[in-house]
Length: 512
Image 1 (cartoon, rainbow, N blue to C red):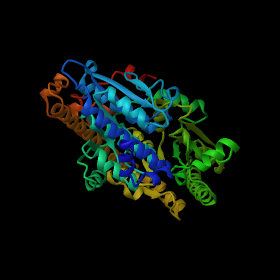
Image 2: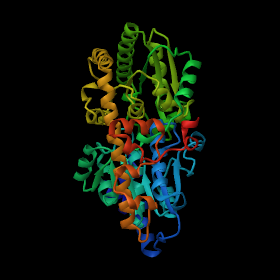
Image 3: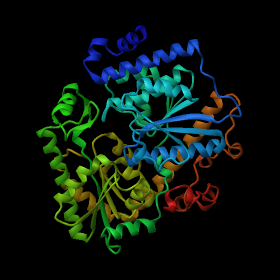
């Protein structure tokens, strides 16, 4: 009881926490971290020893058919396995639904993450030598406090047991007071590599020492262009006409929030079906949310339709997460032109990214639709609900191609941006090549920082022998597919490209 009181007291008081399920969850997670500290004092966890595989738990948002989240983890695992060596890493990945991630993360064990996770994390983390948090929106309240509570909680339990606690390629943004308090108290000593400078600066204000890296999706190898072309043609797309791709979301129904009252009404009376997310959690809903979503969809539809008619483009709609299906279907219904819809609940990440790279132009509210299409040199325009896409486009010199989901003049802005992007196609693609090469180098630098951290923390740790012979960050990238190596050769020179490890197509989606 003392430990639970300490955890809840740290997060604004037990009574208040009991009235707010998010605070209850944070309080329970804090109590479990305190319990892990006590367990460590009484029965210290056995540390890693040279000669045995390093057991790491990759904690993320897998198993929901969120393409970006899954691609991130896939590439994280590839990089870790490459840097440590196949025999030196024993990896496990948390998944919300094993059936939705069963063909992913082939070299890792998948572990089911329950909806109520504090006690589970306290017991599961205990089995490993460390934790790697994987979620892109790692420290943010924009979508759900519960997700970031899980990120902070995973790091906190690992730190309580004096284990590796690594945040890899994540982002920080606005956090609720309860979440901020947890981060300051339990995770400030974690080793965090962010994906942009803004996140690094924000974390430093909370006392977290972080280094700037990048996202981990840049090295992803999707299915072959031939496979994507076959899928597109089977769905009715003409291989001779350019494709304008739209990636919509439901930006106005976030964040999800817990409600006991709604949960009871949902279970007993079947109410709140449209806004129910999972368990006690519900999306924002109501007339204002509905009207805002309608305006957003109409702006996408009208600008895309006018452009497509003017230049004889086909329209493809892609849902990067299963949750995006309703937005995709609404957008298809708002168009008078025919459109083709692909959603991640039916198309795996390898094929979906390959389809994105068939596009001539992309308008996206999904961060990873932009990231994963950039190696395919697809000019992209962002329509964003938060800072993530804006950071990405600003870094590549295209901040003027980023708009807000609730901009009053969104239709006119998109119409102008589509025309400008089409007219600037050669310059746009040169900027994309340079940006992708820069992010690849930064991902290699992340690998260097990771190896350095492991070497400092683990007595006797040795990465792959080849790494000791070079100081180049490019050597710390996982093996790259031929198309990505060709891009590096064009931007940075053939000599550098020839030094990069070559991906085995059978080991990734390139052979699908």
